[in-house]
Length: 106
Image 1 (tube, rainbow, N blue to C red):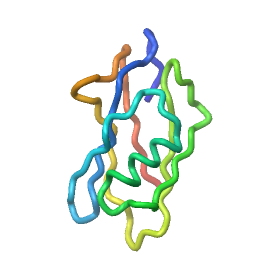
Image 2: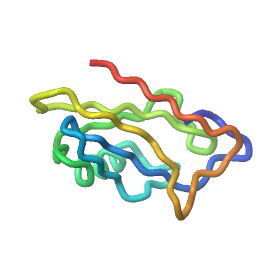
Image 3: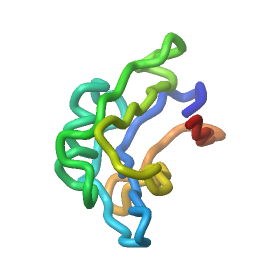
Image 4: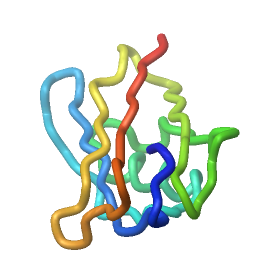
């Protein structure tokens, strides 16, 4: 997520698509949640990823005005499926020009 003014607020979910096409979502995550908590959401709520995820806060993290985090997978027998950040339906992300940037490196 990129900087916004007014400061970022609200919640988002991680949409996970397994390699076999099964779609699951995490519970809503606060915009300023710590990287280790994000890993817990993904690990326990995305199909096939229990105890196979680590997240790291990016060097660009600025909790008041955006955030960056990286996801590392380990112990998988195949490449992970697609991940996407989606705004929560009940408490959507708030801020000006919120953008999402997703990149997969294998």
